[in-house]
Length: 275
Image 1 (tube, rainbow, N blue to C red):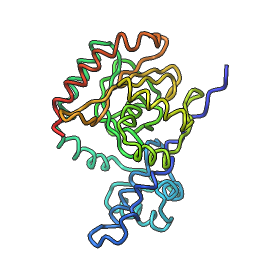
Image 2: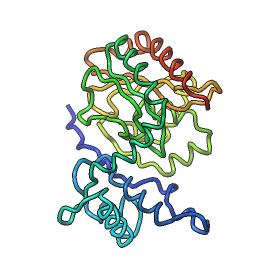
Image 3: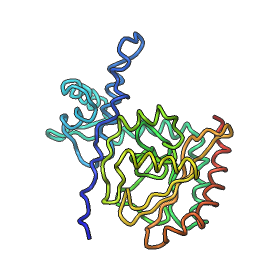
Image 4: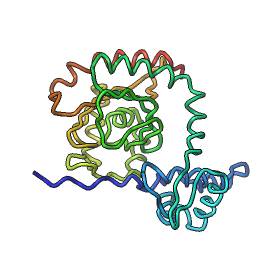
């Protein structure tokens, strides 16, 4: 048996095409505010304090700029310093709460997820695509699947997740090209597909069949199936998935047992969207 890969680095650089400097020359654009928000995003999913150098590298900003942003966040109570390291404080949750509390779609989606979980007796989740990652909006957990808990606002890479592949399959060719130009394709397990050529083939197949299956690419012994959630216009606005521990269900039974109830749940969720 091959030796397991080390845990993935959740602090890979943020997408270069989202860098604040792309708006230089716009007289109404607040460059300082955008840099501060980028530093907040640079904390990512890591669960331990980071240095200014770590955050500067991930944000793609000069060290001095990053430190001024950190100083401001500390003065406002959104971050704190621990020696050479920095961490966000619980106050940062108020920013995300403003979104979730003002978006009825999230509260409307939760009962649908719970109904789906009760039907299939497995964990399911709803997420959208943001940048090169998927952002989780709601989750109904029946069994603990991953070592890392996925709460509201958690992010995972698109290329090795079912919802990510479902959303990538909706992109026009030029947008998909930009994705592969900016994404860092790192292995999460020994089974993670990191070849751009192979991933393009997989995404094309997802586009044709209307769903994605990922087998142990994000976590060992974890399998998932995902489908798009479409508004009445037909536009895919997000994705829905079901995850299982692989020993409990053979891969061949995935579509026969999960696909129909998932598509029914996705149709219900789509009724809440007016885009």
